[in-house]
Structures are given as structure tokens and as C-alpha cells.
Image (cartoon, rainbow, N blue to C red; front, side):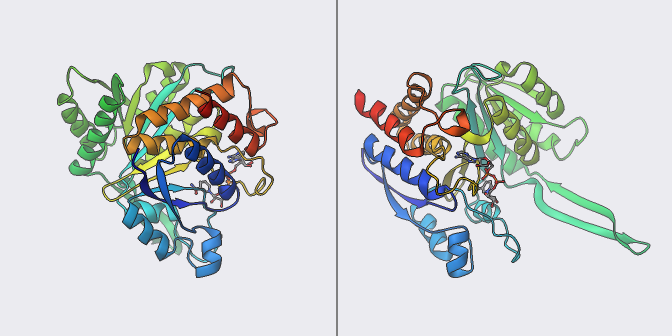
Length: 341
Ligand code: NAI
């Protein structure tokens, strides 16, 4: 396995503890990455005045691949969201959020859904303004969404290609084309057109977003891959994470034209930082997505089965999962599973 250069951002709060754990586990898996470590978040803001320093951006520009620990957003000081800046800088148009049941005994068993969210367009373009009336500066609020044919095609092709590559059976297009006829109509129309190229290989259906939200709670097993616009994807991805026990073990990938950045969905957890009890699994699952992305699918599968075995059979779990294991305990348990074969 030829190691691949990648940027590693330990981040803030529990970030350094969970990135240490992930690096240790990946080393045992065969050192698939050569890490270029960069500071970001509050630690970087204290040093350079910017939570997203130029050195970090330059590193990702070189490696085009990053694993990012959670970054604390400094309050005040007019900082723009680091995540939004990264998305724009590297044109990270696809947000991939897989969710699968890892622990039995939760509300739903056997969930395995991948949500693909368009990450750059829609209502998140920020074309907003107020119109003042009669001395009220905020009397009217106006927001315009932008979806393009090209952007819709790109994300739909990403979702169908992902489905083919990962042996998935169906893609569900989620929209609100009955009301937002132009904005989400173009998305539905384009995605259905893209689906024709995959006929016979990947089934397609579509849902109106409100019906989809209800169906996810009533009968989530009917969904396989979901592709949707920015705002709907933001909401549904959290709902789907909730089906498998919350954000604690949810990984995410932001994939774009110029780079791909992998991260845990949770934040820097300042309340437990430095205590050695943080759960490293969300970041570890993000590393598994990164392995998939660079074509190391076998290692990704080994990693996921070591995680499954540790949770289900060895029953080693951190406090957030109802156990009493420390970050080190679960790290060593996963290392033992990987080295056992
Ligand atoms: P959070 O996700 O950091 O914490 C929420 C709760 O979940 C806390 O009780 C925390 O202890 C627990 N938790 C989170 N991750 C955990 C883990 N791996 N193991 C065990 N318990 C865990 O959300 P919060 O408190 O709203 O945000 C804290 C900071 O993180 C903020 O500055 C926020 O801006 C930032 N943040 C950064 C994100 C990123 O970089 N992608 C995403 C979300 C928040």
C-alpha cells in the first residue's frame, strides 16, 4: 500500500485526543497516510488571529486530502464559519453523511442509509436582505436560493456513481418541486435525467421532503442512498443520524473539485476535553470514508469490522455510549481486533 500525503488538523477541545487515537489505529492498519499536521480553530486563532490560517489552506491545496478534528468557532471577532470558508475555497460540493446501526438495542435496528447533500448552492448562497418599512429596518426579509443545472447534475452524478461503486441498489431524489417549482424543480428534473444513465443498474424514486422526513421515522429501511439540495440535506442528515443514536458516531465527508475533507460531525466537546474519555469513533469512521475515497476499500472494511466487533462483541464503549471505557481503552481494543487476524 503506497502511503498518501494528507493534511491532519487535530483541532480544538477533544480534537487532539481523538486524532491521536485515529492515527494510532491507522498506523496499525498499515500507515495508509503520511500526515502533514496543521493547526486550525481556536488554537490557530490565538496564534495568528485566524482560525483558518494560510498554512493550513496551503497544505490542503497541496495534498487535496484532509482529516479534520473539530474546530471551536471563536465567539465574536466577526469570524466567518470555518466550514463555509473551506467549502467555498475547495468547491466541496458534495456532503456525504452515511448512517448505519452500530449498536443493537437502539430505537431502530439495521439502518444503513447514505445521504448525499448538495453543499454549495440552494438557500445557502446567502443572497439575503431586509426591506425597511415605517422605521422598522427588518420589516421584510428576502432570501433567494440558487440551484443550477450544472450543480444539480454534478451532485446527482456523484450520488449515482457512489451508489454503483458501493453496491447500493436505489437512489431517492428528495425535493419540494410541488411548491418551489423552479428552485427544486430544476434539481428534480436534472436528477431524473441523470438517473436514465444508470437505468438497469440503480433504481430511482423521488419524495417530497416533508413526506420523506415522516417516512424516515416510520419506515427507514425503504431508503438506501438519498440525494437532495443543501437545506433539506442539512436537516435530513441530522434526522438520519438520530435514527442510529445521534451525532456521537456520525462521520461526514466534504468532497469537491479541488479537495476532499473528512471529519466527525460532532464539535470540540469542551466539557470533556483533556479528560481522556472522548469517543474517537466518529473521526475513525470519517477516516474509513477517507480510505474508501482514495481507493483503499479493503482497509476501510477492516477498520469498520474492527469497530463493529469492539462495540458488539467486546462491548468496549465510551461514556457517551453508556459504557465506562476511556479513549485509550477503546483505541487499544480496536488495535487488538485489527492485529488479531
Ligand atoms: P459538541 O458536539 O462539541 O458537544 C455536544 C455534546 O456532545 C457535549 O456534551 C459533548 O461532551 C458531547 N460529545 C461530542 N463529541 C463527543 C465525543 N466524541 N465523545 C463523547 N462525547 C462527545 O457541540 P457543542 O458543544 O455545541 O460545540 C462545541 C464547539 O464545537 C463549538 O465551538 C462549536 O462551534 C464547535 N463545533 C465544531 C464543529 C466542526 O468543527 N465540525 C461541528 C459542531 C460544533
